[in-house]
Image: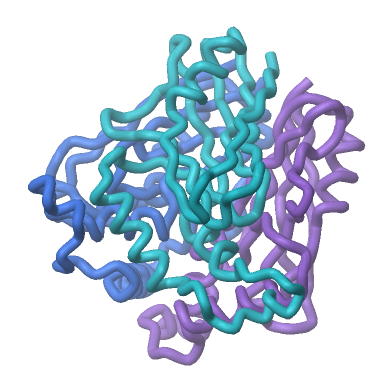
Length: 136
Length: 136
Length: 136
């Protein structure tokens, strides 16, 4: 069985981190797959999907750290195209743009603190995440 | 066919890199899957699973590099919760928390130097890695 | 259905970024899978496979950024083995060594700007990428 769905985002801020564990679980439940894998993947190249803690302090740590590793406002060559989001491409690369979620006995088989997040680095526009569920 | 198993770790040191290629191969063999994919994914958010070289010098290079990119001992906001492992969350993000291993003709279809590693950044406690095998 | 194929590379320069979206699409088409997933994974540990923009300025930004995060020419411990590619192992880790591509209605289900790239960091030798397609 293969089941496909999409999550839409249109954040109010340029950078925003959104917990999507429940959205993924809902799609998996509606797929009927009880044993398998779910791909959760950002379809835009300045957004990330990652698994980590649902804790505001840590999310701020991630954001401060990414700003240090891949600062906004540098004269990126990509900006010669008219874009101003070079840093967003780099930040999303550090976080990763997709995860595979195991499905066991009808549920997301996650550890006690694992939560799925969508990380937007160039928001205020419509973007999608694909959730592709495969299994039996 | 879908087959699920778990690897348990309880490292003696806070940071430890452990080769798990043979453990993954053993689980794949016992699954009966001869063509497919195996997800190998850390279920805890301060540990990584990655593929790279089985060479002690390189492992030390990784550790020194991660300490530079995401130092321990900084005043991370996450520490307001009582935790002291902010750096471990960042380090595991650089390394990645999961890999997909292709299975071809009953074996892990890895390149000549590819080895699967578990990287613990906040050990001395029980943690799990899920191995989910899917195929025919 | 499971289908396996390999892409071969032998770059003329040590570092080279190569768009492989069409190669992956061709393999998926020949697999007959119309709904499923394709793993695209570097089989060598100094190469990456990633998804991002097909824009030369951004590719140069990636390369300059990786040189800053993981410089060549440092006295990496890995070099005691006779190798000189310590930085290449680190650079490939930042970019990631594999992606999962969703397949929907017989096509790669990619967002408008998503392109699949092979990133070589220690080239001038033969290397492989595995493409493993699974679905119905």
